[in-house]
Length: 371
Image 1 (cartoon, helix red, strand yellow):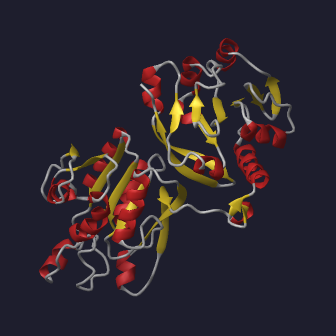
Image 2: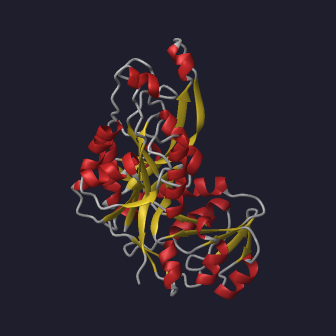
Image 3: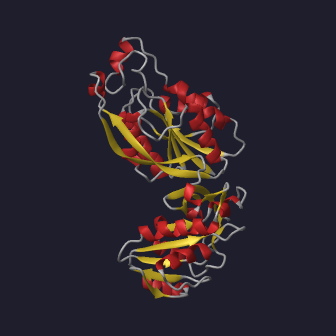
C-alpha cells in the first residue's frame, strides 16, 4: 500500500498578508497585526483530491495542527508518527517529523509551507525521499512546489493511483528576509529534493510523440556509463536495455546472463549465483538490471543468478533499474514484480523505485511483492 507522509507548518505564510514579507521570527508581530494562519486552508485544498481516490493508501502524519487535525476533519484515516513536545511548534518539529517520515519509508512526503519549511525538510531527508510541497508560505522561490495547492494534491493523487510520473531535482532556495524587508533580494541555494512531476519526454528521445527506442537506449546507456565509478564492481543483468550499456562500454555482453565489469573492463561473463557472491563479497558493488517486457518482473524470471544472497550483498540502495518509458507504459499501470523465493526480501524490495528512463531522466514506478 502506498505510504503518504503529511507535514503542515501551521505558521507558514502568516506574515504575508500583513506586509511582513515572511514569517521567520515574525509570528508574534504578525499576530499583533491581526494576521490569520492560512496553512491549514491551503493544505485542505491539496488534500481534497486524495479524498476522492479509490486506491487505498496509508497516511502518516504529525499530531495536532501539523497534520492530524486536518486529516480528522477530512475523514482521512491516519497514523500519527510524531508528537511535538509543545502546542507551539517550531522548525525543529518540522525537521524531527520529516526524519520520522524518512525512517518510516514514506513513498511521498507532502508538506505545506514556504521556503523555510522546504529548507527544514531538505535538511532532514535530503534526496532520500520523494517530496512535494503545498505552497503556503509568503515566499516560494524553491522549485519543489505545485503551482497551486490543488495542483500539488493532484500530482500526489496521480502518484498514489500508480500513474507514471517523472522525478526531477527540485532546488531548495531561500532569501534573507531581513534584507528582503530592506528591499534587497539575496537568494541562497540550500540543496535539492526529489520531486515527482508530470511525465515529460526529453526532446532527444521524442519523435512524433513516441519514443525512438534506439535513441532512448543510447541515452540510458550514456547516463549509466557516465555515472560508473572507479574500483567499483558492476553486475550487468540480462536484457537488451543492459546490453545497450555494455555496447556503450565496448564490451561483449551475455544477453541472457549476468556479467561483471570493473573500471570499464569485462572481468566475468555469464556468472552463476555462487561465483557472483564469491567475487562481490566485501566489495563495493552495484547491480544494473532491467525488467521483463510485458510481465514487469525484476527478479525471479530469467535472472535466478541474482539470488537473495547476492541481492542482499549488493544492497537495495545499490540496485539501478533501467527501462524505456514505452516499456513501462506497456504495463498499463501494473506494478513491477519481485519473486526471489525470499518473502522477507520481496517485502523489502516493494515500494516505489526511481527508474532510469533516459539521460538524466527518471520516473517513479511502484514495485509489488507477491506473497
